[in-house]
Length: 512
Image (cartoon, rainbow, N blue to C red; front, top):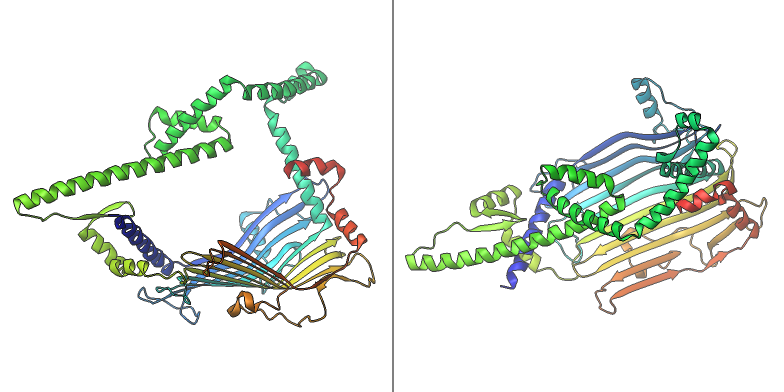
């Protein structure tokens, strides 16, 4: 009897994997020419700016074992998917001209022309994230072993570059300050005097009344939050909302309960709604578990009675039913479903039992050939670089096994350049120690292991429940010798670059 729940769990898991394989095998995505743009002429008077996200294309297609586009029949041994990302970019144009108000067709053409592609790059954009392209290879195997994972994902990106100039930073801080100002105004919007009240009462008297009501309202609100009447009201609202939300989830909310539910959602805060909904979902799951347990006990009693009656009457013919993912099915319906999905129940259950702890369930590999971060002063045409960070050969790998998880990240090379001091003797203030610096990094995707990263600048490996059982969790960090030059002028320049104006310090601190 103790093995029955385990068998049911394994059957359902194998059934879910079969459905997932069917979905992935017939799943293809094509997205082209995405452009989302935000324009602002209020945050910084006299300096309108525009920010946006562009995507030239994103595709997920079916391929064969050689990663060539092909039609794959449902009887294929392994499923291969090729994902391609083309020119994903983020821009922030300062002192930008607005494109609003254009006719629909002209506006669509203008938006499309501002999407940077590999063939037609857009030079008028001030990119925060330069166009990024990459590939992803996804493999779903039918078998699982210590060398072949069930899910295998490989990601490869050529270059990711971030750029930021002081004009962009100025506009971002001003936008944050405007957003904070809007939040503060929103708090007192309901008591702000109208133009008619100002004309009738006089400007000074109307604003004095507004200030008095704002301060007194805050005091009363704090006192109200700690009153017993407020606690009782919140308790009543919580119990009613949880009860009504439990009715709403299965679609049983009707009649006067609908209006009461809408009134409570308008009254309660966003944080309260999230908390109360989590309570309702937890109670509903508990109720479902209790109901299923009672149904199983009732079914066992009926089967026992049916067995004795069948023995007494000399017959044992009855239609057996089974539950699959919460749905009751008889033998015929189950057979039709399994045939349509090409699912072998016995083979899946046997395979689920016979899984060694060294087998690979999921393996994810990712590679970034080159990345950079640069801070500049001035516009794109006359910008002066203050600092730049260049890193190469970034690798990441994660392996999930039935009882363990391994994750590894390595960095091949890192350089930090100081451009604040002309003709400096130390333009490179962070670099690998030059005694044995290799010309190129020798970290390879096929040899992503702890012992094969000796030439990487930094290697971090985390192990959860290692296979050798030496510990519950393991962490390995390896760093090669580095040279770091301290330059006071460089540190002060970076601090001055990011220090917002005194008038906007309050807004930045409030949002942080």
